[in-house]
Amino acid sequence: MRRLCRTHDLILIASIMALAVPALADADFVYSDAATQSCLDDGKGLECVGHSAEKCMEDTEGGYSTYGMGGCMSLEADFWDSKLNSAYQSLMAQAKEFDAMAAEDGFTVLSQADTLRDMQRTWISFRDSRCAYEYSLWGGGTGGGPASIACFTQMTAEQTLYLQSGGLGN
Picture 1 (cartoon, rainbow, N blue to C red):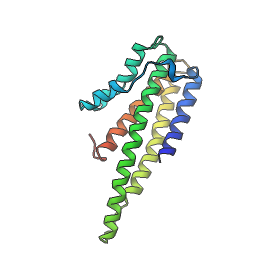
Picture 2 (cartoon, rainbow, N blue to C red):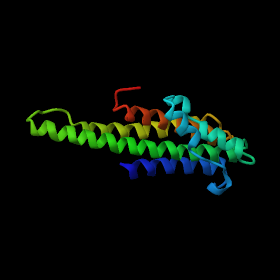
Picture 3 (cartoon, one colour):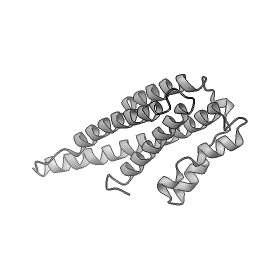
Picture 4 (tube, helix red, strand yellow):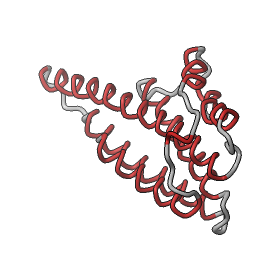
């Protein structure tokens, strides 16, 4: 699943960035995940989205240019994508364990692992389509790249927190 998720993510981000932002070099940005992680450690959940990107924009020369915003936000998107993949793998392991125990006990129940996988695949498609639509709203303008990356980051953060909660909401 990680490969599937990562491949779709990279295709979307690369397509958007190619249209709006020059090729990115991580070395050009003063970025750390610390601001977002610290906020998460304080239990603030979705309020934390964008903290590290904002700090990066402040600390990077030209950070508030389209190039800078896109680069900093892409780096935070990577942070959330990594957390999403970790949360998914953890929840999938729990789902497979549940499915095995249910089968062992002779229960016929809907497979948690299968439905989790299907839900995540459908969610990825929805996220990618929604963020492509966000980009389209800019009519080819340079703000489309940062807007779509912000969409990607927000939606990925929401899904991450959902999966971390065990799928029971926040």
